[in-house]
Amino acid sequence: MSQVSYALRAAALVGALVVLTGCGGRGAVEGTVTFNGEPVDNGGINFVAEDGKSTGAGGEIKDGKYTITGDRAPAPGKYKVQIVWNKKTGRVITDTADTGAKVNETRQVIPEQFNTQTTLTAEIKSGANTGVNFDLKGTPGTRPSGKAVGD
Image (cartoon, rainbow, N blue to C red; front, side, top):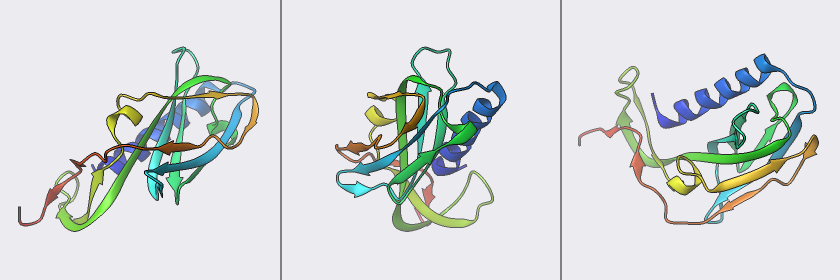
């Protein structure tokens, strides 16, 4: 499974958990995400509760923007924020994890300090939380998400 698929499935799972646990006063959240000034065109964002009690939330980043609303929105509280962006490299690879089909190669370019070892935080309040923006800067990561054809 590609890293983008994994990130999006993880975000969907978090969203499902939010719906199943149900709690009032959720905080709709929206904002932008850039990396070194470039909008993250197809990625994922997860809000992981710092208290370990609140249910987190997650969603997709499209064209540098994300919106998480309704039952998928996080409960009020403090969160660690994880961002992933598997950017296309321009090469075609064999997707060995799924069908073996030819797919666009991607690389996880967001450094670990913004995802698996995140230092990002956000405080979500009840109601609308607009402008929860992340302007990330750093050295692009180069973790591959598949094997290149012919390598």
